Length: 252
Image 1 (cartoon, rainbow, N blue to C red):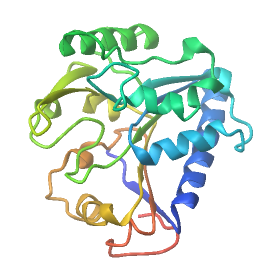
Image 2 (spheres, rainbow, N blue to C red; image 1 turned 45 degrees about the vertical axis):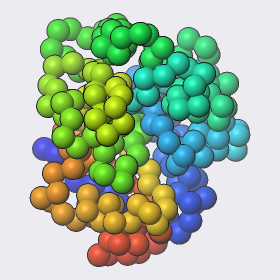
Image 3 (cartoon, rainbow, N blue to C red; image 1 turned 60 degrees about the vertical axis):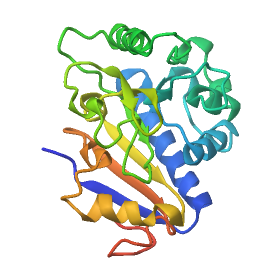
Image 4 (cartoon, helix red, strand yellow; image 1 turned 180 degrees about the horizontal axis):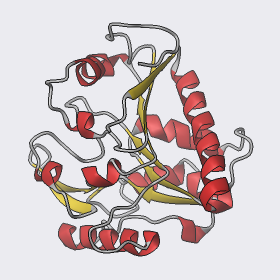
């Protein structure tokens, strides 16, 4: 049964980041207690960068850093020192300074062939999670953002990756950018124990309303719904201002 979204609206962006960090800490403690580790697929973009910086600041207590393993939900097809690199963004936010070096699994997007880079990351995930043929990993947390066209990770409307049902990672050609993006596939996102969307800003209000209230919109972000896990949308008031039911904090 697909998860129904939990929607929480916080008054400000700062409160949004604080709520997300608290959720992160709680989920980490629970996962480590149950499984001895906490596996996270990170998102790119400005909103998660603020979350990563808050987590790295040390102000959130009781995070079991040595048991946390970081992966990437998607990556730009650029080297790790490129300004557009999601890996570089998370590193510069200080997030990776908190965990052992071997706990960070970046996408080797400096490879000359995007498909080779995707296959290599696919194999890295299969090895880490000990997967058999046909199995998908179960991340403890997948962090996602929301693009103005309704894309999430690097699953853009009308792209081939939306139909992928076997691979864990693909090189997805995005025509409007004339480049590949490396992304986890929907079966991986939907196998997670928790998928958490973070959305901030008034410029996202219209697409938030479309995703959460128009069942016929057929947007990629609407297809990120865990089959056996939580689906949590954290919004600040500006991002949630277009929704029909507005409160400081609510669940539907």
